[in-house]
Amino acid sequence: MTFEEDVARLEVIVRDLDRDDLDLDRALRLFEEGIARLRSANGALAEANGRVQELVAAADGSLVLTDRDD
Amino acid sequence: MARMSARDASMSGSSSIGYMEAVPGATPDLPLAVHDLTSAAKELVEGAFPPLWVRGEVSDFKAHRNGHWYFALRDAEAQVRCVVWSTQARRIPAPPDDGMQVVALGQMTVWPVRGDLQFSVRALEADGEGLWRKALELTRQRLEADGLLDPARKRALPQSPRTVAIITSASGAALHDIITVSRRRSPGVNLVLIPASVQGEGAPESLIAALGHLERWGGADVLIIGRGGGSREDLWAFNDERLARALAACPIPTISAVGHETDVSICDLVADLRAATPSAAAEAAVPSIVDQRSRLRALGRQLAATAQRRQHRVLTRLEHIQRRLVTGAQRVTERRQARLSTAAAQLEALSPLATLARGYAVARTPDGATLSEVGAFASGMAFELWLRDGIVSATAESVRARLDSAPGDSVTDVERA
Image 1 (tube, each protein chain N blue to C red):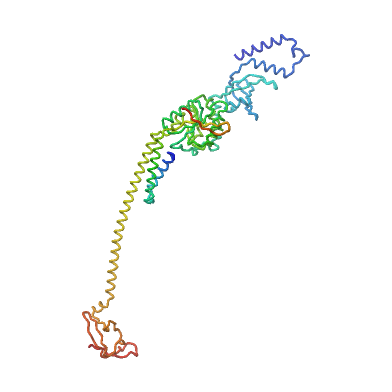
Image 2 (cartoon, each protein chain N blue to C red):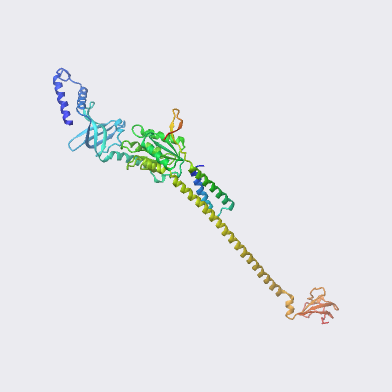
């Protein structure tokens, strides 16, 4: 699950929770999911190991990703 | 300067012809072929003139099918025929218009086939960068006609990209700037360089190929395409129409960052976002982790707030329902009581006891049947008379129907016991 997906889902949950036609059981489950998404998104933010890579076409036309030093 | 060298050349030429008496063309017996004459003139003229910049007004411009351009350069007193061979024409941003004031870099020569003087042009610049502007404008118009510049086409950038693709030179300052800024803003974001040549021959093709690789790979959320600053010629690849069309077709949102110039490139017009510099592009593409954290905190607060609001709403609703239940029950009770008293009143109105109260009496058998016709009586029959305040036991002495009742009824006297 990406940060963006978590955040997008959170926004939907927050909106849905404000609806009147939601039964209590569903509201509780949404709320719990919201908390889980919040945790997951926070976890994604804490990751600091983004990579710098280079995409090049090999001789046979296939694409290869290689790590760069910068 | 040009006139000087031309005169030197013609002087040395005439002296050499004078010296060589036996060369072809010196006597009627040895006439020169026409093409020898014009070829000699060509050599002479080319030798006499170094490449020169010439100012004039363009007239009679014609672009030939094979890519060569023909026109005349003129001023108030003179004109010279000019040619731009297709290999040179390709380097000139746009064909000049008739009447345009230009300076042309070229070589004075003779076209041997016609024997015409000809200025062979290698570079052409219109006053006020007119040709560049014209080329940009023509490209812009074609892209606009195809709807590629429509503001409605502009896509929003992803708020938190996981991977940013960068199409630029692998060795340029632009790449370094983008990596530095991205790392500072969000260390977790992946950066993928798709190297391309960004200037000179073949740069547009190289950039288009990189876009093709990006699309085939499909692993990025947003693209930065660009290069650091440079001369107008250095940046020209980013005005290529084919590149602009490829960029417009890019499946992910695009940010252009071409140079540090205030000039807008064609790619800038087509990209979803134009950044002034590669660093600015990285700032636009990569959200700051600080912003992300505060965005998450805000969402967390909203989540808690909705939960509270929801709880409050449920409680309010419960109270409301309770109130309605109570008042409903009360109303039902009241309605029942009202119905009961109505029924009681009706019952009372219909009760025979009420009739007795008004002074009437009812005759009944001892086992409770009402005796309402003389036919129910027989002489000597015991019965009861119910009055307002009690019961009288009686015996029928005689039974007789009233005179005004139906004929045939038996006649009986009823008397009080």
